[in-house]
Amino acid sequence: MPLCPIKSQSLEDLQAQLHDWGEPGYRATQVVEWLYARRVPGWDAMTNLPRRLRERLAQHYALTTLELVAQQGSADATQKFLWRLEDRTLIESVLIPARPTAPGADEDASRHTLCISTQVGCAYGCAFCASGLGGFKRNLGADEIVEQVLAAQRRGRIDNLVVMGMGEPLANYDNLIRALRILNAPWGASIGARRITVSTSGLCPQIRRLAGEPHQFRLAISLHGATDAVRNRLMPINRKHPLRDLIAACEAYQTVKGRLITFEYILISGVNDGLDQTRPLAALARRLHAKVNLIPYNRVDGLSWERPPQSRQELFLAAIEREGAKATLRRERGDDIDAACGQLRLRTEPHPAAPASATDTPQSR
Ligand code: SAH
Ligand code: SF4
Image (cartoon, rainbow, N blue to C red; front, side, top):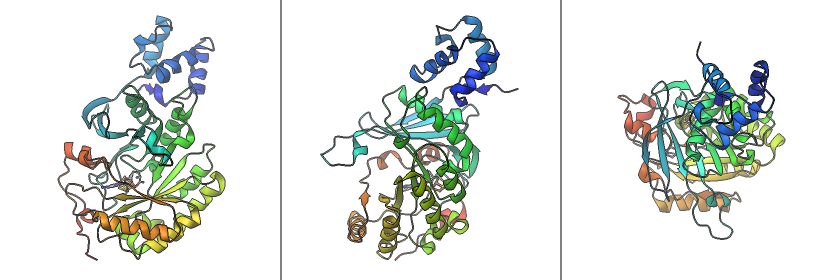
């Protein structure tokens, strides 16, 4: 029987198991301290546990770390980690370090943010995205999601977590929630729920389910189009859950959680950067009190999409602001190191054939 990954277990799970073994009540607390406060890589380091208990734990639980295959970037710029998992598949996390901020600047700029993956590959096949290019391989276990954070913390402080790496987090719902509970718990990684953002391409039933969880996680909606016509071209999921359903699900989330939603909008030249999108986009943002994050498209090897010139990006931003919505334009720092999700893996493990939708040439305006 495969061992149970210990980093998928809550404190209560461990307490129950250790209680069954006749151990005193404080042992589970000692174990989670070694795992999440000291972040030790193996059982032998847990020196305040009796040897026979360490042996029993090792027979029952798997304690694994991620193997670093490649790291790109320097200490003061975006860093990308490529990890190899037990089954030799590859995933990525990206660390976006704090940068000096002016008064009144976006407060996230003063924080170290880690972007983590939730699946190997992705089944959702958005036309512009590197993560979907090789198709879907498997869900990550809760322990593999948690360990990305611990592995990054061994290298420095993490203040914010964004679940925006490879994969669709809400398609791996149970493992995601299990992992986020551990990362949020005071006995775990202790990252505040409002410092954790889950990004989704728009899985409406799961957005509603997330609204029913006790945590105040932030929600980022990958919008990328403010009309169904534009969104259908980019994101196959829009045919299943069109904008009207998506906005209703967001409103349901908002009703329970308050104002915790942002819209992500990649600017792709000739596809979604037309000024016809700015009015409906601003209207959606105003309706949900959501901030719009404009992100210039990062080129992906094998795809022909391009980012618009800076002047076009600024024009788009100004038009949204004129319509009375809050928006920011990301002046990218990570594009030189393949910062968009899935790109580093793609370079390491090139995929022979991209799916048909991904090789479409964007029409000119
Ligand atoms: N599956 C989830 C989370 C992972 S994608 C989702 O779609 O939201 C995280 C973000 O990266 C999404 O907003 C996605 O659209 C964006 N992204 C993907 N490829 C990109 C690229 N080449 N350039 C810029 N952003 C990209
Ligand atoms: Fe999957 Fe998100 Fe990429 Fe779409 S944008 S293919 S949902 S990872």
